[in-house]
Length: 105
Image (cartoon, rainbow, N blue to C red; front, side, top):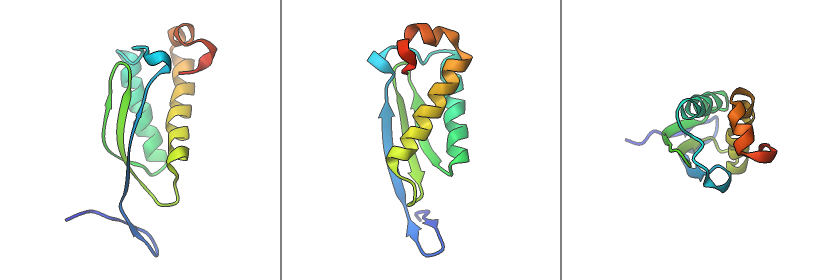
């Protein structure tokens, strides 16, 4: 049986598959950076009531299959995931600043 998300007056099952890449598809997501990205994405999803159905952090891209609530927009979800994780990664890993000039991940 399908699991639907229930609200006060709604029943929904909204899912989105997102894929994003670092600038110029550089293989930046390796080793401790990949582990930290995975942990950050889990933390952000928990804070914003997103359910991660499946996901993968490859060396040059990230796949996520998310379930979300009707009041959340896909563009806002991506702003949360990319913005917060990017800012924290640049603070914690100095070598990323040299590889990605102008602080764009």
